[in-house]
Length: 252
Image (cartoon, one colour):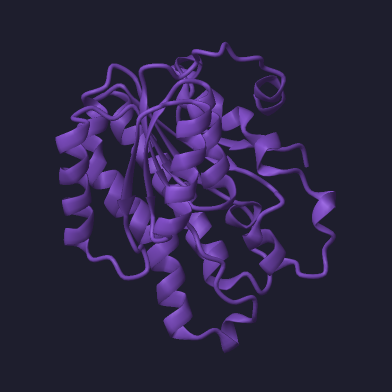
């Protein structure tokens, strides 16, 4: 499946008529996903705490593709449950139907033994990487159900499949994300037209990767634009029969 997806060619109108919500759209994979989804015709709702970055991205997409874009500032580190409810109500006023959700916002935390791991960092990583995805997805499901075919993508990681020393709360949050995807995919498959999957982007040339591996040469890893095919595939109607999978964006 992974190799087949990476070999696909997509029509230019692949996502035309779809409205997609992206978290963590200010940088890295989220930013590139916004540009790629726009290139293939999607309208976007972008969530991030970095409003200036979203405004810059808005200008770039508006210049290049002319798609409709809505910016919704949201600080995942400090957001309460009611903030997610309010955000979704604001989205509903603009778009009563949502066709896709990319849960991409995430933080690395500390790379150190669990014995030395601070509880404050633990709570912050779990809140951004896990709680935010749960709360936003939970509240958006009614709008996703309004679509004829909708897609939820969670962002996984290699350390969310096999634990690795010193990856602490980040690794644990990704294990839990995989579980959330599996549970949701089963719960929704017979009661809605929503499909739910994970993507493990692998090593990509992003700020988070540089933070995790400061001694690594960035050029050895692909750009975010080079790993977009699985994201485009899962957001498109080409993936209507794909549900409950964890897909690798790169070969290992």
